[in-house]
Image (tube, rainbow, N blue to C red; front, side, top):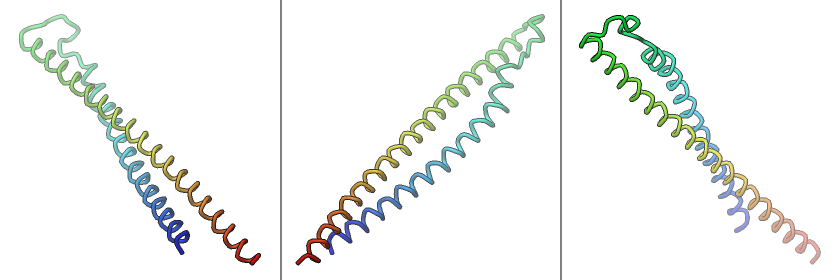
Length: 125
């Protein structure tokens, strides 16, 4: 019964990969949602906000605020880029899981073919 247990083991690995994919897709969706919130509600408004009223008056306080705004937008942009990179890595990992599933399915097909061949040779005897 070695082939049957190998087939069961491979089916279990496929289920584990599918569970991993589901978890990663949930994480990716969550991160995408948070990314969009930060992009729309924080980054874009901060980047486009002008404290200096059209450059008419730039006192020290306004310059400091403008510098702080610039720092905030740069740091937010860097974090947003890191988030996008992480999401891309999630996509790569999902694809690797899918490749593993295909490989396990090929192994199952080979084992089932071997099993059919054994059964056919036994029935001829």
